[in-house]
Length: 169
Image (cartoon, rainbow, N blue to C red; front, side, top):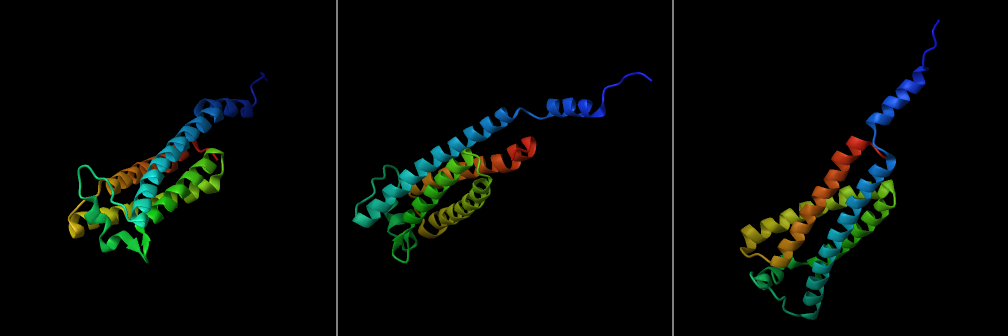
């Protein structure tokens, strides 16, 4: 009988070749969550600006669109609370969850998917209202919708591409 390598050594070498190093996987996830956190801060700044202007009775400075028509519509508040305040809360939640996910909290990654999905659905609804009901667009509202769309793309990338491809937990 000749000496042969134990089967466990062969399998482990094969597994090492197929799976990326854990540091590479964590690095990709870290950069992704940093991008999500940064984008959420842009959305948070936009939402806080709109909330403050609405609560103080200020006029939003729009350069290319008719923001006041959108922001003074009946759709701009819920129970007397500016819609932008809910947006600020949502963006702060996304920032917090992305920060937690960057530090490895798996539960935060799962909740982030649901929060961003709700934000995207709400943004689509608000875009439809602007286009077909109000017949005016607010550039700050469109910025928020764009940020939410990018957040959705990044969260989907994490959830459906990176998690499947690298299977890290």
